[in-house]
Length: 62
Image (cartoon, rainbow, N blue to C red):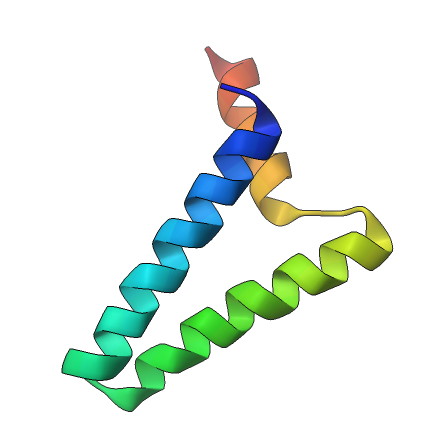
């Protein structure tokens, strides 16, 4: 799996889970979706994505 596919799947999954948490458990769950969105935006400016770094370390560990 490519890094780009991994990051997109991870971000999409976390956003959907956080929306479910915000709707059914606690409205603070929406903060997680905001964090993911902010992280995606900052990665476009800086070129640094923590999810990519984590994935690269996981793949290198194998």
